[in-house]
Image 1 (cartoon, rainbow, N blue to C red):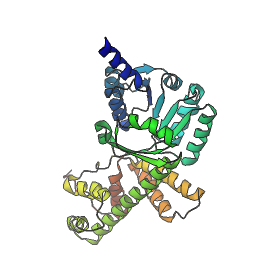
Image 2 (cartoon, rainbow, N blue to C red):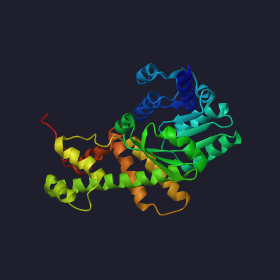
Image 3 (tube, rainbow, N blue to C red):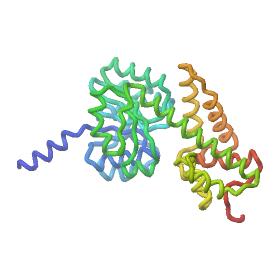
Image 4 (cartoon, one colour):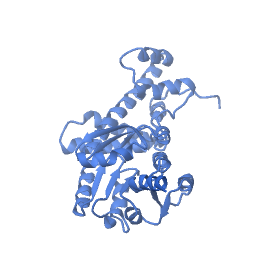
Length: 315
C-alpha cells in the first residue's frame, strides 16, 4: 500500500503537459515527454499518423486548443512561426481564451520578438506566462531527446520548466529574460544561413573556374574556415550527392531571415548581410526549391551560374 501511494504521488508531482504541433520536431518532443511519464494532452489533427504512437503511449486527445490549455499546467507550441502561433493563441477556442492563473505556454517556434512580446502581455493580464524557448538541432535529435533549447524567461519560471525540458533536451540554456530566446535564435539562424549562403556561392564560383571541388573541400576542411554547416552541405554532397544533411527547408529559412532583418531594422542595426542572405533565400524559393533542404542552395546556384556542382547518376 505504501509503495503504491508513493508511485501515485511521484506521478502526481509531474505537471500536466499539453502539446500543439506534432510535426517533424514536435513528434519527437511529444514522444519523449509521454515516454518519460509526463501526463500529455494533444489536440485532434487531420493527419493521424504522427499521433498513433503518442496516443498508444498514453497521451489523451482533445478537440480544441482551448481544451489543451484547460487540461494542462504547461502547454508547448511547436509550429512554424509567428502567424501560426498567433492563430493558436487568438483564434476562437484558442489558448488565450482558456488561460488561467499559473498556466505556462512555451513557444518553441522561431518567431518575431515583437509579436512574442505582445502575446506575453496578453497572457499576463490573465496571470499566465508566455515563454519563448526556440529549439536547435534536427528531428533526429528530437526523437533521441537531445535537442538544444534557449529559454527567455524569468528565473522562477525557468526553474519550473527545467525538469520538463530535460525530457527532450540535451542542452538547456537560460538565454535571459522574456524575449531573449527568440532574439538569440534569430541571430543564430542568421549566422548559420550566412555560412550556408556563402558556401553555395563559393562552390558555384569554384565549379565555374574549373577547380576540383573535392580539393576545395579538402583545403577548407583542414583550416579555420571549416564548420559544421560547411560539412553538412559540401561534405555530404560530395560523398554521395546527399542534399539532406541539414534538415531545414528553404521556405523556413526565408521566413527566419525575414524575422531577423525586421529585428535589425527595429533596433536599428545595419543588416546589409542579413538582407543579402534573405534575398538569396527568396531567390532559391522563386527558383522552386522552397520545400527542399538548405543544401539545395547548391542546386539554386547550379541554375543561376549554369554549372554542375552536385554529383548525380546518369539519367
